[in-house]
Length: 153
Image: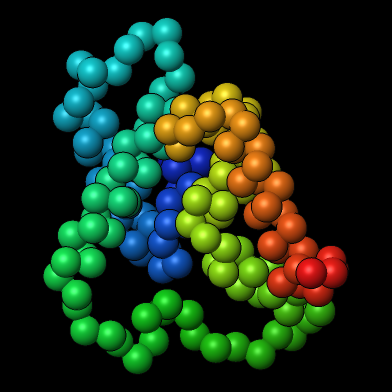
């Protein structure tokens, strides 16, 4: 139960719609419970759950790519709203910049910078080398700063 907020935050890196993110968390937890015998005691439960979520999302994406559903008018589910405060407007800019990142950059940025995972745990979750995590994180930060106009190209 303690890991659900972290799972929801990680799911939001994959799904823009909060309902879809919650569905991904639920599916992840169902798969984890069904495969609890495969969890190795002494390893990190959080990393194991994040790996299940990541694999579930990518499997889902492959299936949806093959099914090619029709395009809806407003796919993101976001309702356009005028910002009432500067901070709210800036938060939207940052959110848009995050969404523009390639998924592998967004994933690493979320795990390390937002959820506080170590480089090693992130490498394990993403099934890549620690050096790759560091490189993706650096590139993600530069992309965000460029998108926000705070770093020259």
